[in-house]
Length: 585
Image 1 (cartoon, rainbow, N blue to C red):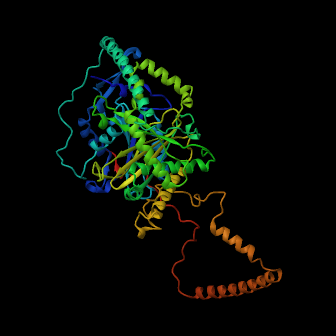
Image 2 (image 1 turned 60 degrees about the vertical axis):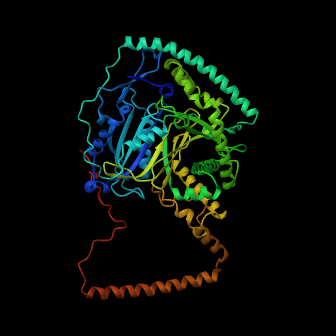
C-alpha cells in the first residue's frame, strides 16, 4: 500500500464531470507483419498481460480515506482482471477516418471508473476506408488517469507494451507465480494514518508556503533586475476560451519529420518551435475564418515541462510543471512569427525554471481531497477561469517517440496519436508526437468550442505548407525541391471527404468562373444563333439515319448473348457481416 504523492492526488481532486483527468493515445497497427499475417483479440490480451508484470501500478486501485481528510492510497487489486480493461469494438460503416475520430472522441470523453485500476484499452477494427492505412489494420486506443502517468510516463508505458521485432522470444510468457496483493485497509487504519499525516502535512504546508513566498520574492526581484526574462503571457480572450462541456472532438494531421527538420535548419530553431509555429498559424487561420481573430495581442499557450529530468526527483508518478508562452499570432509573416516564438519559448523556459509557479498545480494536492474537490467543483460550476489574467488558448505537449518501428502482438505500429486533458477555460489540447520518421499533430477539443475539427485539420496542413514554402523562399532549403517539396512532404488526410466539399460555398470554382466569363465576352448575335440551330438539326438527322442503318446491319450479324440492361450504378459489393482481420478469441 502506497499513498499518492501531492501532485498525483491533485489530478484525482481536480476530476470533474466535464473535465476528466485522463490522458490517452491511439496506435494504428498493420497485422500483416504478425506470424500468419493476422492478430486475434486473445493475442493482444496475452501481449498486455505479460507486460503488466513490469508495470505494477497498473494493477492497483484507489482507496479513499473516509471523509476525504487525507490523500488516497494505491493498493494492489486482488480482483484485477485484464479482460475488464481490454474491450473489443468495431467502427460502423464506412469505417473511415471520420468515424474513427468520432469513436475515439466519445471514448475519451467518458470518465474512468475510480473503483478500478485507472486505465482502459479498446481494440478497434473495421478500419476499411482510411487512406494511407494498410488494409485489415486495427487501432488500439488506451486511456490512463493522469494520477498514474505524466507525458513522459505515458511514453514509457507505451514503450513497455511493445516489442522491437514482430516475433519476440517465445520465452516471454506471463509469470506463473502468484501475484502479491494488498489486504484492503480498515477504516480505523486509514483514520489513524490520516491523523498522523495531518500533522506532517500541516508542517509541510507551512514550510512550503514560507519557501514559496521566499522564492516568489527572489523571482520578482530577478525580473526587476533583468536577471530573469519577464514572461510574455498577455493574451486576448477569444471563442477558444469558452466554458468546457462534456463532449469532445478529435482529429490529427501527419507530417514527415524531415520537413520539420528542413524548417528547423532554415530558421535556426528547434523542432518544438516548428510545431508551435504551425499550431499558432493554424489557430490564426481558424479564428480568421470565423471572423474572431483578435484585433490586438497574440494567442498564448501552456507548455508542460518534465520536471523529473530537470530536478532528478522520483517521488511522484507525476513530475510535470507548466510555463506559458506567446504564439505571436499578431505577426503575419510565418518566418518572423517562428523567430519570435523561438525567443519566447527560450525565455519562458528560463523564467519557468526559476518560477515557483511551475509547481502551482500542487496546491490542489496539498489540501485534503474534501477541500480541493469542493473548490474545484465550485470553480467549474461558476466558470471562474474567465477571471484569470491570462487567457490560455491551448496546451501544447511535445512527446518524442522512438525513431524505429514498434510491434504489438506482432503487428507493426504505423501511426500514433496522443490525447490530453482539457481544463476549465482551456478547451483545446495539442499533442506533438514523433515516431519512426513522422510527426503527428493531434488535437482534442471541446465540441462546442471547435465543432468542425476537419476544417481545423486543413488549417494545420495549410500552416505547414505556408511555413515550408517560406523556408524555401528564404533559400535555406534545397532549391531542387522548390515548388513540390511542401506538398510532397505531407501525407494525404486520413479521411475521405464528399466530392467538392473542399470548395468554399462563397467561392466559385475556377473552371466554372472561366466558362461564365467566356460566355459573357463572346455572346452570339440572333442571326448566328439561328444558323447554329439549323446546322444542329441537320447534323442530328444525319446521326439518326446512320444509327438506324447500323442497328439493321448489327441485327443480321452473329452476336453474343444479350446482356442485361445497363445500370446507372454498379451494385455495391456486399460487406461480410464478420470482418475478423483481428480474430476473436
